[in-house]
Length: 184
Image (cartoon, rainbow, N blue to C red; front, side, top):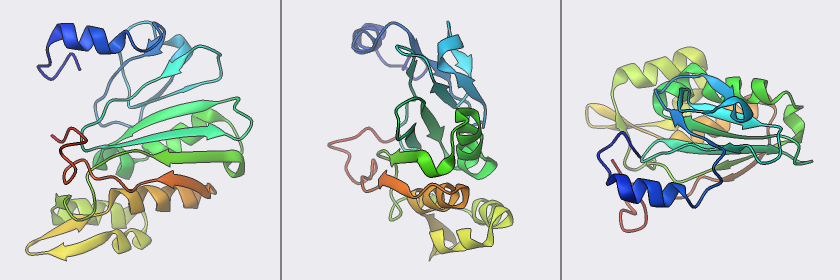
């Protein structure tokens, strides 16, 4: 990425692998969703969707959770960057709402993120999720004075609550599989 000290030539080379009309976002751990077809320059958002052929939704992650969504007919797609803040605050819900498709027709893929055995959080993170939905307590395991959080389970809970049952992925850990993935 251009914002993390990567070599500019490597970033440019990697980005040439994608179509020129990729919707690059300035990800801020928000719940803002934009139409990829309307993005001409990087914009503050953490998700984009597209109903337009050729418009590309893109997110970048290290340990945060990338979520790709589409309807079964292939008429709308989306990509969401779900760090714990965005996930807790509703980035999935806002993305699904922006897609304007029946939830029962949607499928989700959960990409590589920090796994449940490695993602350590404080009481305030657990409390924020439980305040939204008490079922979220199942996604936290005591770990000394902190908690281990399962981002995959939290995302699945949110997707299921919206009526999305076709959920795939969610098995890779960016932290423990450092030879395969970048971890912050």
